[in-house]
Length: 219
Image 1 (spheres, rainbow, N blue to C red):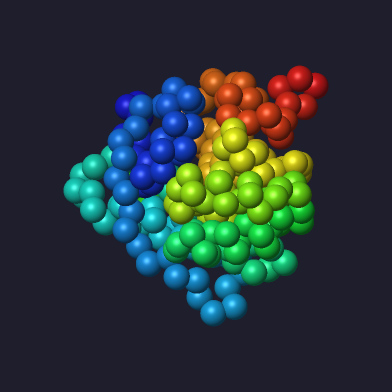
Image 2: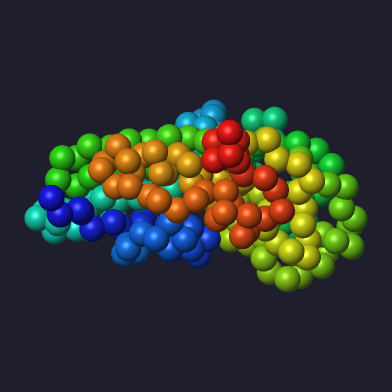
């Protein structure tokens, strides 16, 4: 049986790199949706809704005869229930990073798989606790000046080598980067697609933090 075409509904370079490291052949169709949170919407619910909406939006752009498996994802950062989105400017990026400094927060990364033929969908949300280090105002200023925060929820990249804002992670490191790989592997298996790549090896290529799959791979 021929496998469906895999379509990634994301323009994120980080998610595209992860799929390449999983040795998946895929196409990219960027979903264009309204990502405005609903009133009183919980962070986990927002992450789930946006991933599902992205998958559905891309599905409507495909010819009816297309046999495809759409992978959509979204990452939501929150602190004490308050959403911290992508900063609009330097002032907002600075304020968010100062708010996060030396405190914990949560990263909720969702994945939705949608099979176009059967309309079957599968969605998961992976939540991870992240502790920021006590970085200085000068660290923040230099990082904001680099331009790196502006396309990232929470205004930071955990894998940034110079700023290195995070000191501890409890959960899925690849989810913090933007795509929980262990969840994705299990979800792909449910659609008959086997991923043979070693998840901890991929994670270690991106950060110094341990992978949530280390104990699974090395019992």
